[in-house]
Image (cartoon, rainbow, N blue to C red; front, side):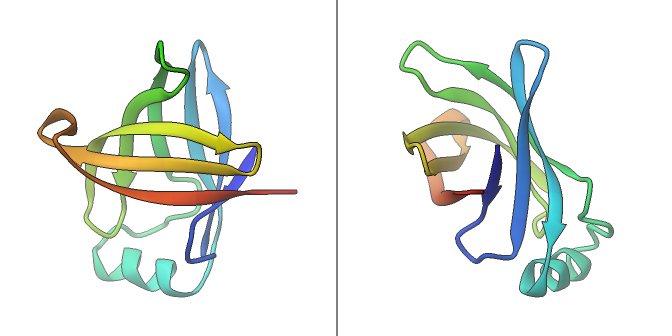
Length: 107
């Protein structure tokens, strides 16, 4: 499906890529565009933010998230909180220190 970040300025299409999940930016606006440009990320539209997520035994997914305004990829987990919300965590030290965001499904 399509998911919107908490700031409402990045929409990602999450689709299967083989047995894994991937997510590509399909719409960008406002601050996200400026932040990506300031970080030298360039063209954000079409960027794969969610990469190589594999299904886990707890029902979640584990892979890598690319953070354009930092220009880096991080270990990540995704858990679907309910049909309309995803919790996406980006972590360092293989999951010891994480930051999370809740994304909202788009119609």
